[in-house]
Length: 595
Image (spheres, rainbow, N blue to C red):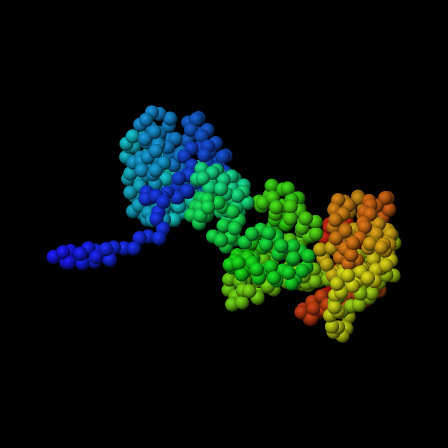
């Protein structure tokens, strides 16, 4: 008997489940941050102050409408404000009974405030039930309020059934409609409502609120990490709180930093992305490919990597146009400093081109069987942007790229250099049957710069560079070389520009553009003395014979001729307008007959 009891106890112990490796800290259910920190007052709603103020004033003046339409993306406060407004209408600021009513409304449990999910109650029968309930008097509040979320999901018959009730509802009925797609709500419904459009919440405001939440939760969150989370939220406070919840769950030391973001979300650090942008701007193809590989090896998908790269070029665009201290830059202070330096060496057109290219390749990657090849090609294409001809320019007949088969001295003849050192405007080419010529190799700036030891040679090289780089052409067309000398440390150039034109003023206000241009052409350091032109204008004169010779060798014209099977009838020189930065040099119009 004793042996049997002993064996039974042993059997019971063996059948027990093994202890859990991780014991939960608390046994009560956890409420996510997005629900715990949901707005409860008009003033608590972040980013929607004009709407909150309007509804509060309507309450104070007694001018509340019978129907409202709240429009906006997810997580910006539409349903929260609907509950707050409903509580203000029915609970007011009375005693304990009103407080209980208000709490029930905020929890979505009050009998007089009915919340309807338009996605699951979308038919004509649901609309009839709503209309029938609207005829009943409220039980303990002043109004019977209907909050219809995702109202655009209702069917057309359901909308039609609601029309009459929404136009002339009983005096005790209020409608608050919420939607993320207002264009799907019939105009007949919209015209019966007061419409409020909720804006996307700025990343800075989301980051500030997330910081306050982190402090209340006892978490140490860095400002840079919070700003990165706010950017990922895309204007949605609820998304931001949900992302922060994930980080809190992943943090073992009560800290949230950039390293944790990279671990949880696979989000690369800004330093790596800005290194990649710098490699592209400085035309370092090998470094760009290595950094791109490092980005992908860190777990970032190709499509996401392109989106991140486009966003960083957008930062560079803003820094270049508005300065590194601009409020439009939603990035960390260290990134601002880096962008301010990079902005001095980049052209706005390059940034625009990079953003468009990243977007186009990102869409192509979705259906490609070789996404990595497209990604690498995109990086090299951006790094060598100045060496590629524009397809649009080809079809438009614009000569913004020099004929690759023409010798440099033939493309820009020093005999047609304008007085005062002005670089001659590039004249659009003409046609003439000519043999196909193999493309010439473009020499790096350091090799070209070794030949430049005089003012005329510099003028020639600048013109040569202008037809190879459309980004620098607008600067070259506005400057005149007054003096140029070689020094022990590099070179010294005295250059002027006309302050009476908008282009000239731009060049004078941005001497770093001219300095960067000279470094490209000379291949080394240069001391620049940039002066406003004093009461003289260098003549714009181009020898037509030389211009025609250049035109006959232009491959763009040849391509258009071959594409349309056309012949050139006449070449007409045209002087470009002075007030257009992109059209500040003379070009030519070509009349073409199609066979």
